[in-house]
Length: 163
Length: 450
Image (cartoon, rainbow over all chains, first blue to last red; front, side):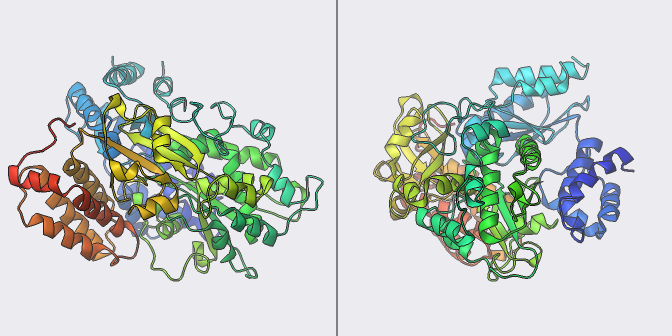
């Protein structure tokens, strides 16, 4: 079930579009669901569909088309490291490998404690900041040297009380 | 520290990319420091004067919509998103008398690899985009607009929403702007990870809450756009150029660039340069000068190649690039395109096969799957380049790559197919020997690469 507090956040998004175009808010609503619940389940898709007056399949098309929606649960922190060419020229792939070693996971995997999921990703639109990465879809981290990556991992562990 | 505080330590501050003081005659990035993005700061820089001017709220007579469009036409402002289409001409395509809503859309879905200029505009000068959009809406008689922002820069989307609130509260957006008869509602919309949504009709589909699959054109958005209504879509930087044009005149804008290439342009210098970042310079500035602003090639190494307009633009070897000026016509004459203004610099340690392998993977990953030549062809291109890179290439692969690329180009609904094929053809044209060496020796001819 999508909590009422989460649904309350939909209102502001739906208000941006004409009354007969509620479907336009689907991307924002799914992003809110993901932020509050960690991923977008088929059950959540159905509830969003009901809320916006869309066929559930139309919502599922959106979830599956856009790269950033998590269709499965991920770790507490999802780390996306850009490996596209401009980043590759400035250590993007190295940053990804460093995190994989540091966390002891394969790219695409989640740490045993459920704290981190590590993924490669395509262009984040911050190429001059390379190596660059995104944490939980919403926080971009720039100029991520090995030292800063270590600091990030330790900082997040400490913030979750698992240092 | 809580999670937010931890993450904030790594948030870009713009010092390296925007506030380095190495722009030349900047208009959009002028006077920014990262803290002065608020409405009152923008007003102190002369912001919203252009909107006041056209509405006759600066003591002057105001401007008619036709006069605004004529000014933009004279400026020779061309679309900054990649296609370089004349902005004033695009605006004149909108039907004047249309019963019902028309829409204005800003394309801030900045995902062309190498490009990060719109992010800095929206982060550090969001009101310039709001003012530019309001002026455009007035010129075309539009009542509602959306700014579609790349989902990956979510913090920038949040910043833009804050700026919208400020503009509404000050009467620059909403009903009866500044007490005039002109009303314009503007909202922010975010993407969530799909390169294809930078294509204007895919963006419209996405804005309607669907998969971002491009539409067949015609009909063009000016007649059938968002929700089937007349719509104009421009890039963020294009809108950001408009207030300056209205305040100083189209002629002055044209004169600060070169004929047919008005104004300043922001270039994102990325890859093997000493100081990666955005550099705003007059159109027609020599490439060598822009490279120098970015501190030259990293580590003082020799320049090997440049992709001058985002990853979809054909690569150019150093000797050709060093003879170019940075404007639509010069780069086009050299066989590439200015595109989004992302300049991907590669030094003499770079392997072109490995570079193309990464780009081809990207286009395969981002193909929306709608057109067979692109859906199948991008995967085919990647598989062939990948096997060459991994020492499994066959002599016939050279012709195969060319053939597959040729059969994608011009055979798809949108430009993603061409964008995947062009880098392949340009790499084979300019760096053929490297590919042949890889196939023959099953190893790289560049001694040390990443």
